[in-house]
Image 1 (tube, rainbow, N blue to C red):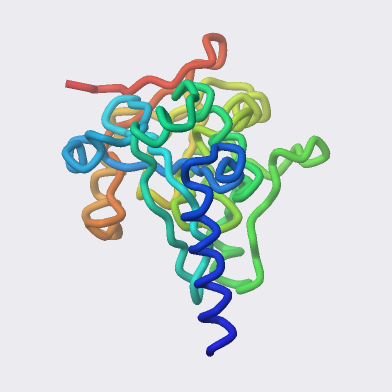
Image 2 (spheres, one colour; image 1 turned 30 degrees about the vertical axis):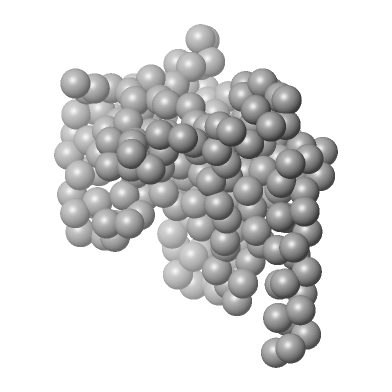
Length: 230
C-alpha cells in the first residue's frame, strides 16, 4: 500500500511540476466528450470544441487508480501560459488520445461471453470484415471503454468506418462511453432517434448522458453535423 501511495504521489508531483511546461505535459493531454447544455457553466473557462450539443473537452490525464481513470480539465489560462494556439494543442491532444486509447468495435455477444474480449481493431488495414451494415449498427468505443465515445472524433476513425461500410454515417451516442454507428440509407434517422431516447431512458446513468440527438457524418465533406438540432 505504501509503495502504491508513493507511486501516486510521485506521479501527481510530476504533473504539477510540468503544468507550466507544454513539452512536459503534452503527452498527458487527452480529450473527453461532455453534454454541453448541462455542463456549460463548468466548461466556461475550459478548452473545448462544440458540435451540436456535444463538447469535446481538453483534459490532463492523471492515470488510473484501482481501475478508475482520473483527470482534470485544462483551462484557457493554461494554454496561454504555454504560449500555444488552442487549435494546435487540441489537435495534438486528439492524436494523443488515439494512441492512449485506440478505437475499437465491440460486438455485444462477445462482450457477454468473453471477459477477455477487448474489441476488434477495425483501423487495421487487414481487418475488413469486422463491421456490420445491418440496422443494428456498430458499437464503437476505445480500448479503455471509459469515455470511449470520443472515438468518433479521433483522427481517421469516421473516414475509415464510412469506407468500410461504403456509406455516410448516422451516429447515436448512447452514453459518454460508446457510440452506435450506422450506415446511412438503411435506417430512418427519426426512428433511430426514438430508439436512442428509449435506450438512454432505460440504460444510461444520468452522469453518463451525452446527447439524445442523432449526428450525421458526410464522408464527402468529412464533417459531422447534428440532425434535428433546434
